[in-house]
Structure formats: C-alpha cells, structure tokens
Length: 86
Image (cartoon, rainbow, N blue to C red; front, top):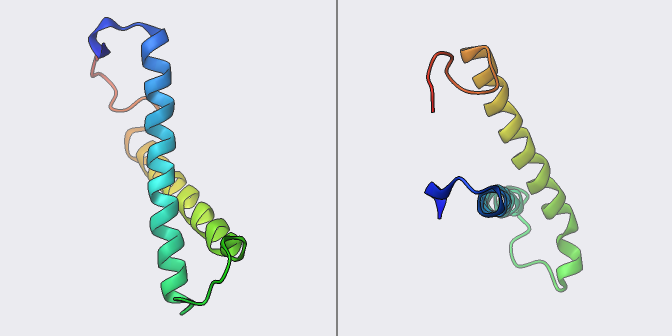
C-alpha cells in the first residue's frame, strides 16, 4: 500500500502516525510531570488530570519544536538534507 504512492492511502497513514507520536509523547511527559510533582496516587477522578495533560502536551510540542528548529539550523531547509532525492 505504501509503494502505491496513492494520496488516499498515504494521507490517513501520515495523520495516524503523527497523532500516535504526539499521543505517546503526551503520555510520557504527562506521567513524568506527575512523578516530578509527587502527585502519584492522588487523583480520584480523571477530570483531575487536566494539569498533567496540559503539561504533557506543552512539553511534547516544545520537544517537537526544538527538534524541528535544530534540524532547520543544521540543514538550512525544512525538507531534510539538501541534494538528496527521495
């Protein structure tokens, strides 16, 4: 399916991949926030997790932004290494 180069197939796969990566980073950073703030086992309802969720999302987006800016500084382009064809 990937080798077909069909946008109908590739776009949903790209969105699922991006959302999966963001979700994984959000969960990891949210749990890290809870551990650092020593809030382990202190939540009684899922609604109380909004601060950890927000902190995890913020840290995940900051990590992605940092990686993108480092790549831009290193390569000088958003598309990867100049001169390489896909």
